[in-house]
Length: 391
Image (cartoon, rainbow, N blue to C red; front, side, top):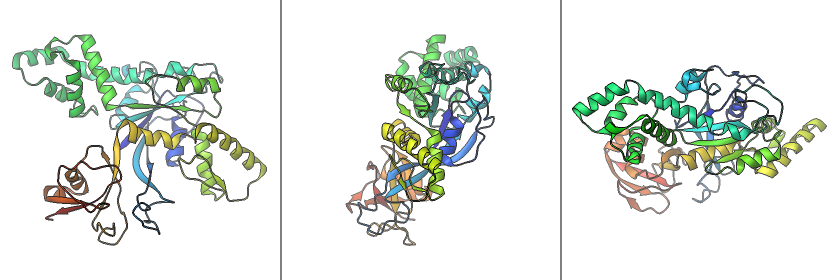
C-alpha cells in the first residue's frame, strides 16, 4: 500500500490531521512530543468513479454518490525539532519512521502559536514562514549522514576497484527508503565524477535524493485560528505547494456526519444539514462553513489527493474480467481500483494483479473502447482494463 508521511515540528497539529484523515484515536494535546511512536492508519484518496461514465445507472456498489475512495497508508511520525538528524528531540525515531513514506505532508502551524521547537507561545508570536525549510534540511542532513558513513574507505575502494558509481551509492543507501532509480536520477543530475566529490557535493547529492524520494506538500494547519496574513504569506511562497488546512474542522464534520447530523464526504467544499442541531452545533457548523467557503474545504482531503496525484504522479486503474459488463468473475462491478505510477503499461498492471498473470500476459482489452492493447501500451488515468493471459 502506498505510504504518505505526516511530519513537522511538535504541536503543529499532525495528530489532529491524522485523526481527521483516518478517524483513528490518537493522543492530541497542547505540548510537544505528544506523539512518541509513529501512528499508522488507513486514509483514502478520492476520485470520481467511472461507473457513471460507463452508463452503470445503478452505480457500481464500490463508490459513494459517484466518488471512489482508494486506501493509502498514513504515517504520523514523532515531532521534529532543529538538529533532529543529530538525535535531538525524537529525531532518530522520526527519521526511521519516515523511511517508507513516498511523499511527505509537512504540517505547519499557520497560527504562529508555537515556537521552533513546538512550545506554545501564544497565537501570532511566531512566523510560520520560518518553519518551511527546516524539515527539508533535516531530511537532507539525515541522508547526508548515511552517505558519509565510511565515505573515505568507500571512495578508496571505488578508485581502486572501479565499477559503476550509481551501484556504489545504491549499496551505500540500502535501507534508507531511496529507490535505485532515484539514485540514478540524482547521479545523472550531479554531472561530476564520483571519485572527485567533496563534502559540498555529497550534501548536494543528499538534497537531490531528498527531493526525489520525499517530495513535500505544505499543510498550513490551524487556518481556523490563524491570522489571514499568515495564510496569505504561506500561499505566496514560490516553489512551494501550500494548502490551507483545518484538521479540527475536518474532525468536527466527520463526527457530525457519523452522528447523522449532516451529509458530508471528505473533500467536499460544503455540507448539508439533515439532522436536528442545537444552537451551539448550528453556530459551530456555520463557522466551519464560512471557513470552507473561503478556502474551498477543510484542506485535509486536498492535501492527500495532491500528494498522491500531483507530487507522486499516480493514476487510478480498474482491472476487470468481463470488459462488457465491467465485472469480475463473481459479477462485482469495478471490483478493484489500483494506484499506479503514470507511465505504467498493460503488462505492469498484469503484474500488479498477480505475478503469474504478468508472466503469462498475452494482451489487454480497453473496457471503454474494446480495443486490444499490447504489453507496452501506456495506460491512462481511469482506464478500465481486462488482462488476457494463459493462466
